[in-house]
Image (cartoon, rainbow, N blue to C red; front, side, top):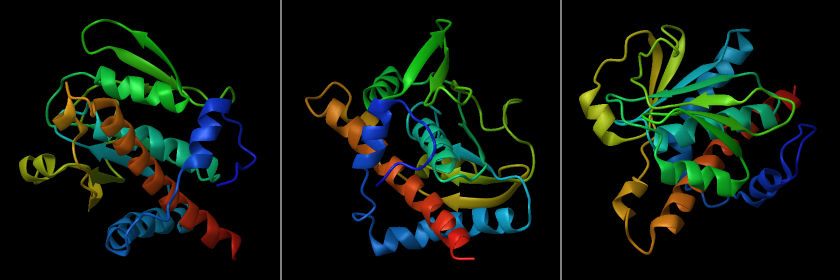
Length: 213
């Protein structure tokens, strides 16, 4: 990938340039197309694009979804507001935070129990405030948003998401399964890069469509 006119921290730029959408299977692209169609329709109608990534604990996959979708939208020049939440409150997992730092984000932590993390990806944009919360937390949208379900457990235990316009299933394997193993760092990185690649694929498809008009 080549960097657009947007400015990112240099280490993050390298990570973005290393992303590959070529490994996304055709089956997965069918699932991602649901999200592409939703965003495209909102954009075409001049409506605000709001995405809420939902997983059980809002500690790993949903947080990755939120930040990478926000970055991908910004990279492709599409205004979107990305959120995340869970069915339970825990904390933004420290291993997930470290994974994002290694990818080139600058992160500042405030507080001890369930800390607030300010995640910076550019000098030109305000940071994304990230912490573990339920999906209907006061900081998340109450209407006009897509609920992007990132894990099967949340889908099963959250059959109804109030206020959502569209429920989209994009399940990811949980890197938590490798906590405390020799594969821990690699698996967190793998999941982060998978989610990043897919979010960049989604927003690049929309950007390319707009350029063709």
